[in-house]
Image (cartoon, rainbow, N blue to C red; front, side, top):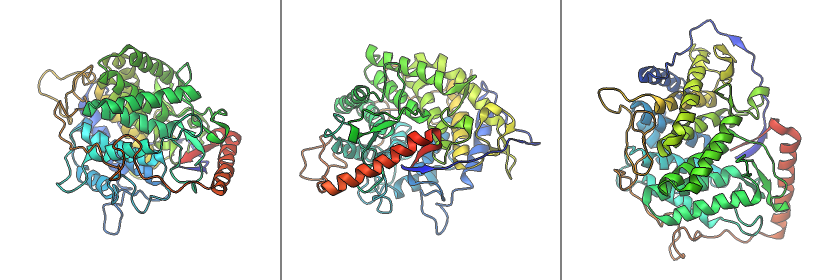
Length: 481
């Protein structure tokens, strides 16, 4: 992700058309609304057309958000059972895997950060967990793709400054190289926790614990379970930028829920899930409706942030399938947010495009786009986890069963699978690790050439410029991929 400043103004427009309707205890209304929102989102995607590039969204969207969109669409199939977009999803996830099957495609490698790579990897991980159709033999497999990215992230763990952590950027010449943040490390943590649960390999869990402990040690996660954006490593991560974003809260909550499930109800991880949930629901809900609190109320959310509620919804819903005690809190919030998001879907040329400020209900804010559609879609389809189980018939979503505390939410069984509970994706624990290295998950990736003093100084100046924009611009300054 890269820093940018973008102010968008949205006039509240009272639409005359009828908004989409979601009745939260009726699955058919959720499926119907989600189908409409997904269609209005995908009309903007041209990557599957002649002359397009699979996985790439149109300007001004950066590469990472394509990974986020296809992750949201896997959830769409998972929760609704509608496979209309599955071929497009597979095409994009495989095309962007790159020649080394590690989500570092040639057209992005010199620009992407750890979080960018992480979002595509989490999409692949979700494909494995939902038994999404496996790629043909000879193509990269979902689990192996996630393992490759995890191993590469492990190789970048930096102990020179701040006592550890991933840098935001991978390469020295990119802005933010000397910034360590919660989202880059959150992708690493989330992948580690999920890989531990899926494979049963405790090394992944040890890494997840290590990342969590580091986040707490530098104060990115405080004693009240606030999760802050990050800090420059040039100051040893002591000057923390205390902006809070919903996707940071969601990615750690979901990772912690995976660890709780993997450890079969460990008290420490249960306490962390509970603490995160209490703090998160207090910050990112306004009268029970989801809100991107740092920017939404003052109309300063940028292109990236307009999609954050999609991932937050997804990870909240998934948490209920891993830690059933959270459903009584999360379920009603997802339901009320789904209703409100659907009510905002009454604008644009289709008269069903979704605004962003769901707290305004049917008074559409006129703020339309892929991120806004993605957020609404995430909220609406995630409400499926709170729908009571039907008295006849089975799950009409993608399904899945697993052990531990996985209950499948409110009624339908949406629990992610593992390799011992029906998961079929093929893995490779050495993916992303060059031949002749010390082994997987041990930091074995080839190291870039040593950073020169000139590069360190230049990166330091870039970081000062980035942080100056964040602090000076407050919620106006946001990070884009």
